[in-house]
Image (cartoon, one colour):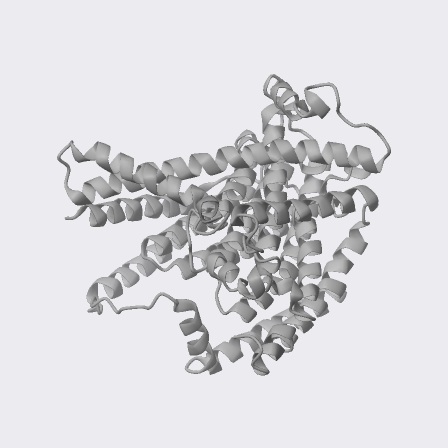
Length: 369
Length: 166
């Protein structure tokens, strides 16, 4: 099990050592040599994570279609590859060969930049996600804050798409999107603050490490009553944050065509689609890290397997919610954020500050350290 | 100059240039929305300066508050104005010379102060966990300014709601 657990970290160390020995013959100074090795290894890590994420998104698209079909009593994609597994690949190829249309009266620069501004933050946020024991690109001591801050840039992309397309449906969708993202960011951040209060650190790696008790099962979701309340508020506001049904009024087809990406086609639209799934995957990662112990788990599976299993569980619940609930109305959506989620989250912070949770209680009785 | 210092210098000038270019767009753009977007580029450049100077917390807070909240609110306010879809005319008006004059004086003043002050250049060792320190300082040494600010913001919030209801 130890071998499996440290498989990827050992691979990394071996690769770094190999590059070191390859460079040794060039007669560089020690500083320059380690700088070059660090740069090459950084590039390798970034490339691997990006490819992995694209693979994840392909799987996610397939899962979404199959899940939707299951809920609606259909078969779903079943023609391309076994069980329709290659359907996302066919979709991607279709997207690449489609014509890229820019409306005549659009603000061309803003219109073109919008998909990039949406996509880039979604990728950046993965810089601090710990995938397994010792498997993280960077351990910032402000990890959680980094994810939230970078995520808030994505809102700009929605806005730029809405404005740059010069279309009334786009503009309406953009405005709805911005209003929704700003509102739901508040309960989301407040629940993250709850966990930060209980852990005393903002580093995602340390938050995961602090949940290692009880044979890897001391997850914050079990810290009654603070943990479960925080999780529910976090999960709902996260679903709203990434514009998934039933919170997808920025692109409500029945009212405003497709919202902010009405005027996009081809791969530009594809980037919005990709960013949406990146963000969905990201908030599920965050939920798994904050509330389900990240890679912590009973020792019969390696850490990274536990992590992926938890993330996919959250994703599956998200898809289930998406297929079974109708869309909110705009006023209901805003009311839900400000009148329900924010007060609950604030009360929950008060409870966490008073140390009114199961873990603190047990700690006070001396049952856990 | 060691390699590290060289890289830090390069990074500093790059992010500084980003901030300046954004600021230039913000004051010269014809379209008010593009001006707002330029302002955001400038904010991100400033956050980059903080990152280069190893003040990660400040940098992230800069992005979170200035880009994620303030800039988005500015954009939202601009969206609610009329005539957004057509060009809003020239950004220059008859008073640009006076404005430039005042800006120049402010710049000179700041320059004199920045160059004339003897800065404490001894690197103060800051521990790994700056954030708890900031929290403690806010709750002890700087409690009064902190609370005064919260009160001000609360008053503004209530005022905004009152105005909106009328």
